[in-house]
Image 1 (cartoon, rainbow, N blue to C red):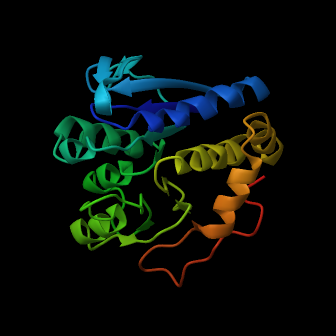
Image 2: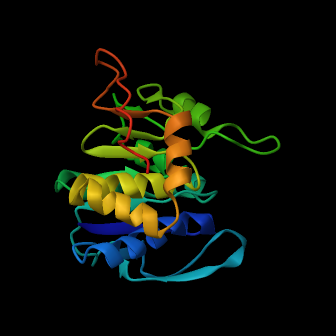
Length: 225
């Protein structure tokens, strides 16, 4: 399971929990590998000033099984960034699975990869912010935007907001490396209780599109302890 984690200016530092989860999973299975990628490679500046040195540029990044697009206030610039959108389209066309956490879904939608599909993104907001699930639906009427833990459309998977990126990453680990690896990763992270609580309050949705017959929540235990 090789994962490319896409970073860009003004993502929230908490989105790096995706990388932290992959790092813990590698303690359980050496089949896990990952790298970071940004438009030009090198340094990106996250929200509130944290700087991260990325491994690759869009032009030289290795192939991956999954490309995870992170979220944060910088999504507003990235939905207008032709280089970002083309990178995601090319990776998708090459058969690499595209995943998003938080407002990364807005970028995936802008690339046209959520058309006719169901998707999720961040829900809670502060102050006068608009709920990103509402924003996703308003900007892209061809996307069925719903509150969920995870929406798995096969070639594209979207996850909920902020720390729910951990749940999406665990879900991917289970999909590629099996339930035992996922459970053991959650255990050594001391995340079993949080994962179960998230599963209890939010659905995991599979194989649904706007032309489909309905939303089918995953069975208990798919994402949890």
